[in-house]
Amino acid sequence: MTAEIDARLASLGIVLPAAAAPAANYVPFVQSGNMLYISGQLPMEAGTLAVTGQLGAGVHTSEGQRAAELCAINILAQVQAALGDLGRVRRVVKITVLVSSTPDYYEHHLVANGASNLLANVLGEAGRHARAAVGMAALPLNAAVEIDAVLEVE
Image 1: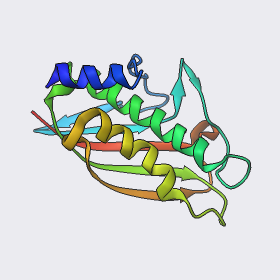
Image 2: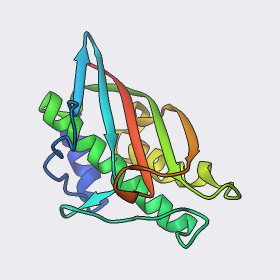
Image 3: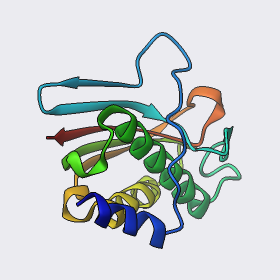
C-alpha cells in the first residue's frame, strides 16, 4: 500500500513537508490504541502561512479550497511523522474543517472539499471520511482554514 500511496502523491506533484512543530502548549498528534488524533493544521507551505484572511472578505472559495488542501497535506505529514508509514492508515475517520469567514459566507462545505478530495485521492477508500465544516470568526495567525483529523491506524 505504501508504494501505491507514494505513487499517488507523486502523480499529484505532492512532496510531504516536514511535520510542523506545535505553536503552543500541545502535541501535534496523540495515538491511543489504534486511533490517531492529529492536532489542527494550518495552510502552511514552504514554512509560511499560505492563505490568510476571511472567506467572504477578500478570500475566495477557490483560495479556501487550496488552503484546505494544504491543511490536508500537513495532516499527512503529521501522520507520516507519527507512524513512519502512510500505509498504516486504515481509514481517515473524521476531519473537522474550521473556516475563517464572514457571517454571510455559506460555502464552507466547498472549502472542505479541498481537503476531502485530497485525502481520498492520496489514500483511496481509506481517505473517505465523515466531516464537519464550520465557520469561525477568526483562526490562529489569521489563517483562513484549520483542520484536525481522527484516523484509525494499524
